[in-house]
Image (cartoon, rainbow, N blue to C red; front, side, top):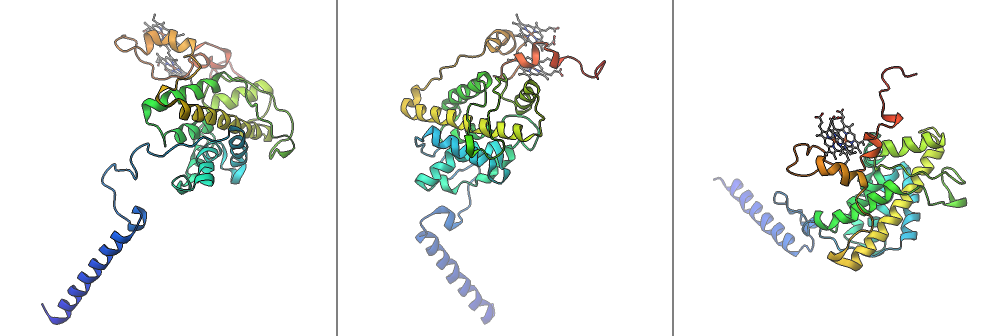
Length: 276
Ligand code: HEC
Ligand code: HEC
């Protein structure tokens, strides 16, 4: 090894030792840029500590979050819980990249699948509780959404989109497509109208209010938490054959109410023939 190269090696060694010391001195993992082991998660899975919040305050934040840069329902609901914890308690809540939840707008990028507000709330629960403890929280929130006439929240003169009363409809479904379409058909609003946007902003506030009530109740009850809403009649009746292990007709995988899709209502008849 020639002199120059040896000098270089020594120099590099000193540099490496120096950065190792720096890494040891560094207080946080992010600063040290330590690589994860596969499937390793900072702090452990479902490991953040939940804090009680004020449902009315969060509802207002959720409504404003819905309109913030048009980030909509998923962002509004999630921010109203985790973002507000970030405002009140700082880290780790404040470190979350909230705009990620914009993906849920209009049932995930306009696909009309799960209502984004419901996903935002369920995702926030998952920062604190794993599947077994989270399921009763999600059941309670989703069953409430299926059966409650929404919107309830009315921002009054502070409304961002449309000011004034909006009709409330129970849509029987957690899906954005069914929720929006049924409300628009029942009340004769275009799906692209300001009234419809406003309705979804208000529903984001309603979902946040309910989700925070559930969060607070869960913090009080701990592992003993159980929801107040029973499984839908259809889930129990149809599920006896279609969602029961061992049955030869055990084909259905859902906890949604079967009714809107399998009751033979006019809306789910064949529209590909003899239809305007
Ligand atoms: C007593 C058992 C039982 C119950 C309860 C039951 N089903 Fe079924 N279901 C069956 C059987 C058996 C078949 C298969 C029939 C066939 O192969 O033609 C079937 C088929 C189906 C199918 C697919 C075939 C078709 O006819 O469209 C759907 C969808 C379905 N059921 C939905 C439901 C819903 C929704 C409910 C509740 C309202 C329900 N079922 C309640 C036994 C049941
Ligand atoms: C959001 C609408 C929706 C809901 C809610 C829903 N289903 Fe379905 N289900 C469908 C659609 C659409 C299919 C596929 C039908 C097809 O194209 O064959 C299907 C398929 C099925 C099938 C397979 C039969 C087939 O013809 O492919 C069964 C069985 C079934 N559903 C039972 C249920 C039961 C039981 C529930 C309630 C616990 C339920 N579904 C809830 C829309 C729904």
